[in-house]
Image (cartoon, rainbow, N blue to C red; front, top):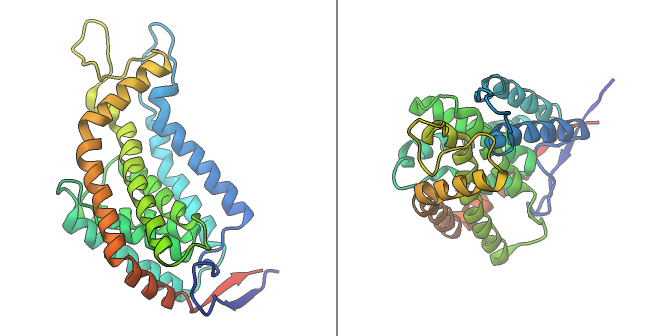
Length: 279
């Protein structure tokens, strides 16, 4: 019969303290499986090789399954034990992120949601960062009526951003930590844009069919990987890299550099609270 113990986090609240959401072996396996499935669903245009004359249909079945997979992952992570105060912090940060995304999204890539997501993942760990990414994008989508087939992918990729922040080296502190987070925030901005472009690429530009109108950027069913990859990277470069993604990267860098030290201190002060862990 499982028991419940209460442990205090690092009193100093340093970067090397315990994480708020414990990620056990089962949660790690489920999270890894969901990540692999998500990558397959994102990258199907590059890896699918239909035969001659075969009809190419996007994997809508996988699209319907993705919310279920995310729900399973979140349930597994919560099984690791989440203190009520940590749950309250998660709710507050998700609500703040939802509001920030609502007031900033759609303006030249200025998106304030990611800087708080990165700082939260940094302080509370990869499990918390993944959950915060999912809940922030879900809550903001409800507020802005931005619910659509793209939402599960946004939640998954944002979860990866928060999880990656929690996996950064824990011993780095002071100004070096801010520099590390700024660099990560810039890279995460471009990776997020790249992966979300991959999800929408065949739907927006279309599939090249002989005798039909298409562009040099269109997905070509059955073409070699390098050819479709070249088309996709060119599409990304022309549509988002120099605009939305760069705006997002600059926003992340400035927000982390200017607000990061104060926000990290506040979050770590909250992290000194006790947490519940199942043993």
